[in-house]
Image 1 (cartoon, rainbow, N blue to C red):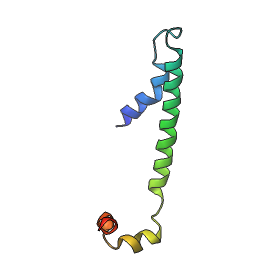
Image 2: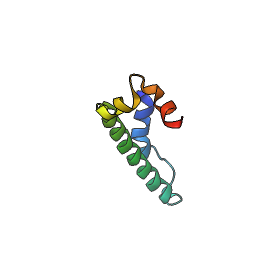
Image 3: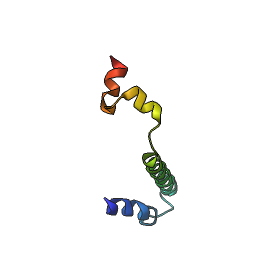
Image 4: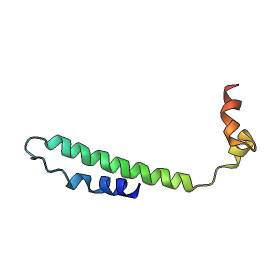
Length: 72
């Protein structure tokens, strides 16, 4: 899993195609790479946060039953 992320980190520099034929694709790939990095950092930070107390009040002792309570 780590190696897949490592390959994505070096992906913008691994583009060996001639730049005169595909300049927009390389720019787009770099933009998507940085969006991916930002989303990974954001989701990692959110995953480390404690759930609010209101979540436990709504979901009860079994958070997996939250969907059943919402849709029933």
